[in-house]
Amino acid sequence: MADLALARTRDPGEHLRDEPGPDTEHCLRLYAKLASGVTVVTTQGGNGPTGMTVSSLTSLSARPPLLLACLRNGSHTLSAIGGQGVFAVNLLRDSQLSRATRFADPAALPAERFRDVPVRTVLGAPVFGDALAWSVCLVEDIRRYGDHSAVVGRVAVVQVSSGRPLLWHDRRFGSLSGAGEGAPR
Image 1 (tube, rainbow, N blue to C red):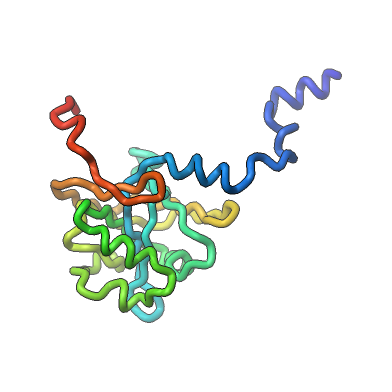
Image 2 (cartoon, rainbow, N blue to C red):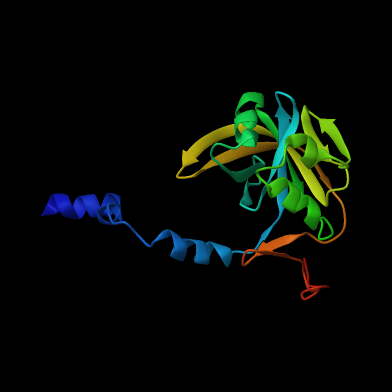
């Protein structure tokens, strides 16, 4: 009995790990309610720049400066990031919906995705010159979790402009309504 109490103290949820949990549809409905900024993660691939739309991105640490991006397993972009060790995060403006959908299309070739996009290379990673903000990150870690991989990047360079971000919520793109303007920072 004491051993069981000690085991629960170490990991109180251990006995739940073998439970199947909610089904995929219920989880996806929950995830759809999480609002996020829309980014395009880019890197240099074997045949030029490659990238994909990513809405699962967050700050992980201020010191050291780390970002966490979740990319679909099997994507060309994830493979290229692993090979290059550097990637860029381009935060899209609310006016860049067509770019978000183009980079989200799995059938679009990299050349199609980057057509008419003002790109420059910073530390070996392609960045969008007209993004709301961008950063170039050096890969700290890549770990597979389910159908995605968590990519941790150490922020090496940052550029931030003014404007409004493109948002993803409830499986739709959107923008800020103006609520909260003038709020203290």
